[in-house]
Image 1: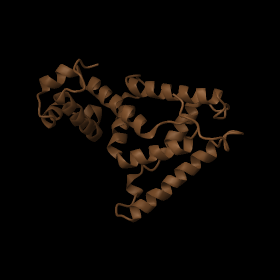
Image 2 (image 1 turned 120 degrees about the vertical axis):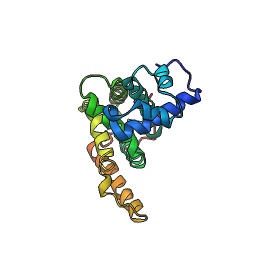
Image 3 (image 1 turned 90 degrees about the vertical axis):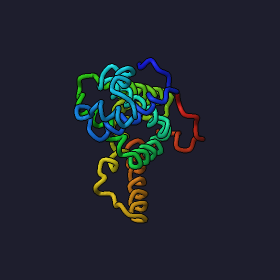
Image 4 (image 1 turned 180 degrees about the vertical axis):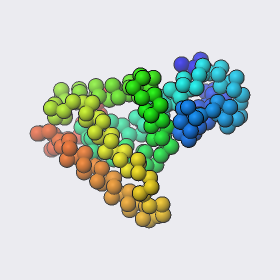
Length: 205
């Protein structure tokens, strides 16, 4: 972890510039000199905070994963609602989705994308606890639940060319797609017996 605190403005500018650079060019194509120029600092200053381009990417992704988690909030008792929030977030923030996809493409299965793996593990454990509490069908592997829900939720964010660009057609189209996402997840993971009519619970975790 870089030594400076979150209040360091030059570091914040570096992270912001790196986020845009990685989303646009990927990890291999990103250039530290462009990041430094955009952040109004020097390459030496960038390397004072982050020892390598890969370390900088890892920090940026971890920062983005925190933002996604805060915006979407995984509630195991309401997977359709979670899917709708994930859909909304990535349709509104397509650069953030590209940012994370680059890591999957370039790191592959090497284990370098530790932040993503840690996030997936934590969410799968939350789903597993929900199964033990009777909120989810225990027949599913928690990892399958998480991956299937996220893939459905992000399906339209992955198809920007099919989304109308002009309002109100765009808003109407996305509202219909969101409803389809929520309905699909609800059909795949319906409330278990006795949950449908229970009062809403506080989120787990």
